[in-house]
Length: 279
Picture 1: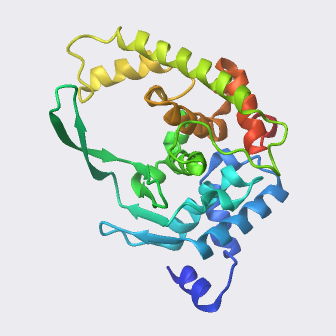
Picture 2: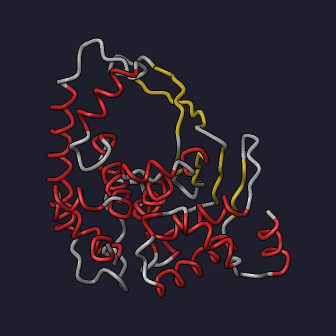
């Protein structure tokens, strides 16, 4: 963390050019970003790293490239908005790989079920941190499938601007004067309902003895769900639909624009970016 130590100790707010170029080179979906946008993205990334703590956990040794690679992806959604959307964030915590989170839930009979689940990312509400798995952040090949855990979790943070994440992010007076909440709710509700139906229909085609740990079953699952414009996880909840749609909007926008053009247009208006036009 040599550069970050210098940043905080000397109040320098500048990412070294070589480090910046190396990080951008690893993010193919930024290849067509105009030079002026790259400059602004760099300034936002520097500001984020100067104002929010980023901490390694679980034995991860935090390095400059880890910090910058996360910062640039976190700042992409707010490139034409404001970092104020991340005010409700204590900092960023990075684990080497998937981290275990305990869960509990009471069923209709009043029985409490407890389990532990490995996660690649989590955005904690009420001023909490964004927690990431470096193994998943670094999983550059997953970009080809539209996955991006950093954008996903920071989209959740944006969504939490109204309170609990529900798929309706806050509209900013300076940026979204021409947007209506009713239009957003109508388009996203319809797309979410349609996507959920498509996922359920595909799940019914899986064999009764389906085992995701079986390579053959996993390959069958991938082939079956490949026609979807985004990960089926988006069907879990409207908040996840917004977060997953935000991932593919920036990383692999064509399928989303094809299947849900109204959602794509609303995201383009909200983020004030048009990835398809850049491509």
